[in-house]
Every structure is written in C-alpha cells, then in structure tokens.
Length: 332
Image 1 (cartoon, one colour):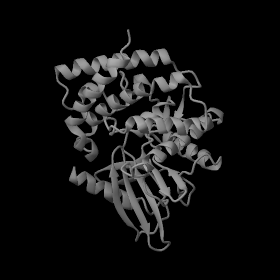
Image 2: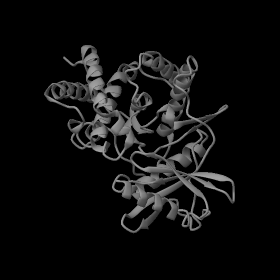
Image 3: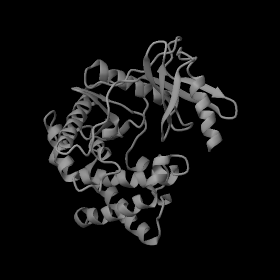
Image 4: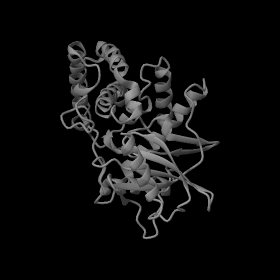
C-alpha cells in the first residue's frame, strides 16, 4: 500500500505539466477516500488548486465531465458558488495521466477557494449552519427541476438497488465489519423496512432527481458571508431528501440531530415547499445512508483511513439506531 501511495503521489506531480501548472509547485496529499485529493500551491502565481486523482473504475470520463457541467450550471445560474475546474492548455478538464507500475488515472484540477468547513461544536451557531444547508439544498433541488440537462449527461443512481440493494455501488452491506448472526438478522429487517417505505414513497419527479449525495458540513467552505459547496464526486440521481441524510453522515447518533434536522427543514422551507410526506421519510433516508456506509466501510477499510477508523463500532451503533428506527417505522 505504501508503494502504491508513492506511485499515486508521483502521478499527482506528473499531472502538473499537462494542466500547464508550474512544475515547482508543492503537491500535498489532503484526503484519501474514493479518490486521492491533493493541495497544489503554485509559487509563480501564488494560486492554489485542488488536484483530484480518480480511483480507476469508479467514475468514467463521461460521468466526470457531467459533474463539471452541473458545477458550471449551478455557478453560472447563481444558485450556489462552486469551485471552477481548471482547463489544460488544450482545453481539456479531465486528463488521463500515467506513471510506471501504476497505470493511467483520470485527473481533474479545481481552483482552491478560501474558507473553512463549519464547526459542529459551535453551539447555537451550528443551528444556523444547518439552516444554511437546508436552504442551499432547496435552491439546488429547485434548479434541478428547471434545468435542461445535456442529452449526454451521465451520473450514477443512488436509489435502493444501487445503494443498499443488489447493485450497490459500494458492495453488499452484509460484507460490513462486525456483522454476526444477530446483527445480520436486525439489519435485514432494517433493509426490508427501508425498501418497503421507499417503494411506497415512490420516485415522482417532484421527489427524485439530481442531488449532491454527500452534503456534509465538511463539504461547505465558509468565508465570512461567502459559502462554497465542494466535492460533487458522488452527485447522482436519488431522492431529494437523501441530501438531508448525507448532512449527518457519521454523526447520526449525536443527541443534537433532532434540532439540526429541525433547522435543516426550516432552512429548506424558507426557499421551497417541503411536503409532509417527504419530511416523514427523513429518518428512512438516514437509515438507508447508514446502511450504505456500513457497505462502504466493508469495501474500503483496507485503503481508506476514515473507513478503517470507523470499523466495527460503526456497525454496532448502526444496530442501535436500527432498533430505534424499527420501533417507530416498521411496516405492517
């Protein structure tokens, strides 16, 4: 793994030239999840960039290009600020870069925008941050309903089948860590209940469309009154209310979640209508997301540090949350 990381670091540096960036730039690894993300600081211009090395087989070029097209539309239509993708001298925004003993990987470079993620421990200010998330989500969802997507627009689905169902993007949740016979039985009940409620809720165009799909506070950059939304790598087609579930990923058991949910709903309704049926299923989407992350940990813990850190305790807490959810939401 160390040797592979060194090769990926080498590839990130090799990507500077085709993007027309200063070869003397510093390239520092920031994050490893689906992809490897680096901060590039270019001394000759004083500019900073985020360089993303894509994991092979996760997103193809058409899907990456579609992500960038949506970012452009959100920014151009003044829905929300998003980071511009850097064009290479030849006009490309997605470039395949190859180094020995690793092979080719797609690379994208974004402008590094100022700001820091909101702080969940900021007391009452965190309530305002969730209101902001709710209002931004509503603006983005309203834009999606009105936006005419290009004919070749291609992004993945995050419906039942492709999240926790048989075609799950991150593999079967049953391969999660710490799942014994008791955990399996409980989580199978959870999956069946979530599936039944989602089937009943349906995929009407007013409820299902293009979403960010990873709308955590960590993916907001706040700089004074300026708010930037980043990391659209998982954007795709799902229920609009799934975006709420992603805002509390990894913190679903926090006792402050009910007030954060209330703040998110208030922020959403300050921009757009939110039907009672949608609000009633927020917990269903939270549990779908939770089970999806169990699958993610199971398939990623060998190479993604965050997945390894979450480990078995995440499954244990998921089972506790499942018991609570089933006590109020189990279908009859």
